[in-house]
Length: 135
Image (cartoon, rainbow, N blue to C red):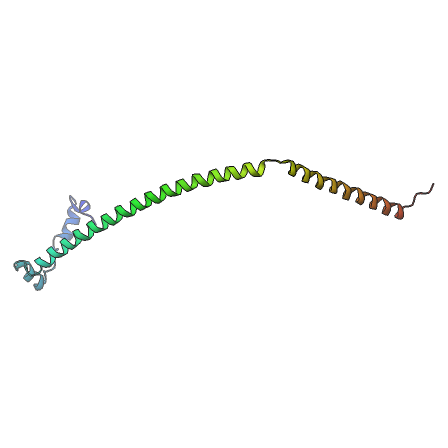
């Protein structure tokens, strides 16, 4: 129950009137009354200095890593522009029709017409054999 529910309510305050905190252990009371230990002070100072040095070294490492990443990003952007230009050039080469391409296409079309004509002839011959016309 929070304090705001107890404040101003006599019935609830009576329940807490007999509350007494537990006694502190003797070992804690002995530490609380003792002077500060100076033996750990040099160690603490040394660790603080090491922490500062490590923090500085890490910051320098991160700065250098960021510099490398920026340089790599610039190189990647340059390569992307080069590849885009090469792709555009290739697309122009692929879509450009030459006289040789036209001649090849005409040869293929002529052969296709010939094959279709032969297939129609064979189909007509087969049809006449299955259903002979009587004249």
